Image (tube, rainbow, N blue to C red; front, side, top):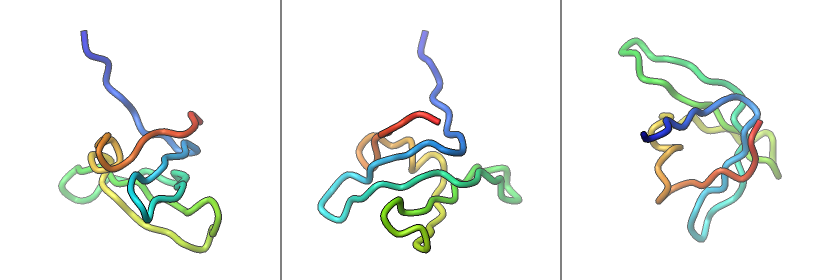
Length: 69
């Protein structure tokens, strides 16, 4: 059986690639269509925020989990 991964506040993800960096999940929200999005802050610059769909964050070609909440 395949285990479903879950994104929760406090988790830290590493962006893969040359412009990577570490991003911490600060909030999870749903849009009007029901799609979940994660608001992230850069760990080395907390003023830098971005919002991504949870599906993009769980894409192992874009991000990998660094720490569990």
